[in-house]
Image (cartoon, rainbow, N blue to C red; front, side, top):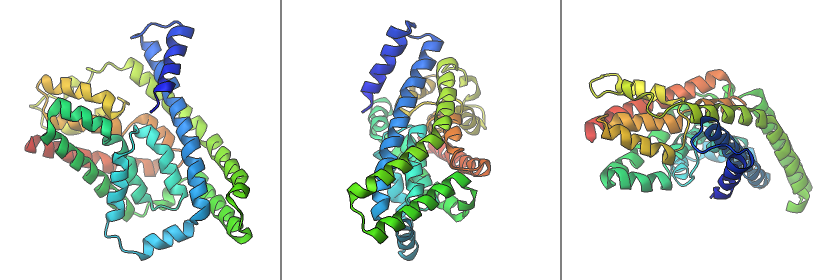
Length: 325
């Protein structure tokens, strides 16, 4: 989908800057250019489209519908399944997360999407089948969806909306005011677009510094941390290998398709599959760059709670994988 951005990044790094492939600086810079362009593009597109949708489906109506209609947890499952069909890494999922929050979707439901989206997607599924077989792939996909669903339910029960940043609350208030004007004046889509576009630019200006810093951190980690650095801590005889692998995975920022070959190498070296998959889930589902991006919309306390719940669920999944596979 974003091959053209990758081609531009390659051209800039290897042709214009004349850096060598495989060089640490080249890999870090390439990663930074590609991910920054991709995420900023997603921010523009997603927030603009969500602005149009929100102008016709007021936030209060969405909230009232979800609070009055008993969906018995299906909303969390649907958010997780939507995450499966969106091939994004953890940082790329943040723009949609912001759009969901702005649209009045409950925080727990948006968390279900944010957790599942980087973990399970069609690219990862295809690679998983080729590397580990159909049975392991089915278990992995089901566990990823369940992980997102259960985590979302837990986080919703904690009533964490008060831990959203003042910036998000202001964005929500502005969105509600805009919708009231749209409805009162019965404006057409053409009349609404200038207001929607202005709001998009306001949101983008607020989030760009966090995107740049977050992706810069990810680029440095991608370029300078060797892939085999943590293998010594995942020995099959270590009872705490799964939690150690999950926690140590956080600095290794990557997407599912990028980390799967590493998982294959780990398994080939005798590391239990559950431990290796927990490491993979930690890499793609939790990352310092993602935390930097989320800091614009969440307080530090909320980020810590979010990461803690997901980490606990990943650790449990890792142990279950080791028992089942």
